[in-house]
Image (cartoon, rainbow, N blue to C red):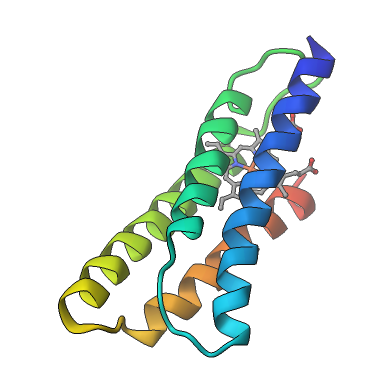
Length: 117
Ligand code: HEM
């Protein structure tokens, strides 16, 4: 059971890497836009994260305050991706603040995961 949980953490990390990596490529190339890969990464991180939010395969207690904060941050990232996507479909571009916040909030969620114990 513990090994299965580690595999789900691994999948969770793939989702995080996909979301942050897809965002970083656009930021590096100064392209202020949402790409489908960001949505895919978010969905993978969300599904695996929700699976990890249940207390199975563990010998310690989960920090539910931390998990709740991570869930709220993830929902905000999802909202920004959705709003950004619909704006760029209508006008050809998205507000740059939303784009930068997607990266900052994704990094924040990873920081919360590893620093807040
Ligand atoms: C963009 C969103 C997210 C990012 C970047 C992210 C990042 C991470 C990272 C880097 C870890 C590994 C930490 C470690 O093992 O020390 C982790 C673990 C974890 N994440 Fe997330 N996460 C996100 C969303 C979520 C969501 C929405 C939930 C649940 C509602 C969640 C629940 C968890 C749990 C429970 C663990 C601990 C796994 C364990 O130790 O058994 N995460 N997350």
